[in-house]
Image (cartoon, rainbow, N blue to C red; front, side):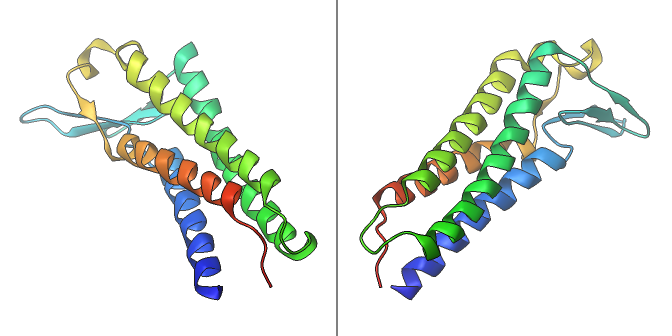
Length: 159
């Protein structure tokens, strides 16, 4: 049973780390022209040798949703730890599961909005780029938070 608990905790921490990486790292959109330097665009700035802010109403929704997902994922971890020591034997971790599933919904929302509206975020010179590693990490963290939330929904406290 201790091995299962360790796996659940590590799985949750891995999804939280992926959410932090997706939020902080500046590679949601990558443009590399031949003979020029690579330009990275994240949720806040587009950078080559200098950075300038990117402002768009859809991008602000992506920013809010991914930050909310990260916060909810961290909160659900602390709630899990509290419930681990406070709920009675045989009860489920429903509150933790709800928070984690909300985090999953926020990740999916932010990545979906970015997918649908990515052409409106960038200047014309940056539209020829492709999705970067942070975008992929955000999509990878979606099933991880979803599976984690479903695990908490099924999980019962044992001795």
